[in-house]
Image (tube, rainbow, N blue to C red; front, side, top):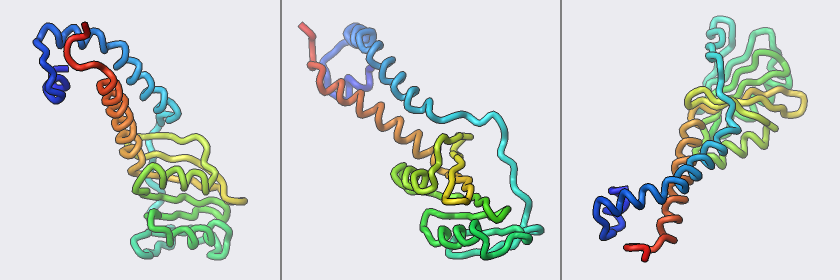
Length: 182
């Protein structure tokens, strides 16, 4: 509170700042509860992600910064392999893995939450899981099951939550009269 009063150049002494802090506590608690409610859609992962088998049992290629791998028993014209071939041209895509003819693991690094929402809509991904900064979910594209992973999406979600809380606080402070309330 002292920092905010100093930034807003409010002529309040220490006792008045303490009274203001007590008065604002319910509002700040409500804002934090809103942020927690928004993040409640994210389900924490209770298990660790494991690395998939290495390149010894996969055919691995590199295309414009995107690492693509396919299991040797999967035909290159299978539905999942063709979808991986199409999607790896997108700038957000950093990796594709095709373990079966109807399953694709797609790793994307969107630059914004708008980009992440676009991928979720395009691949019909419903609920998502979060493990640290990695967010993932399973969706479908036609007959193909797609495991969508976003290694940086947790950071984007955290930044959005902080921005919203800061904007709510700024809005509240802008509406509050400066100086003495009487």
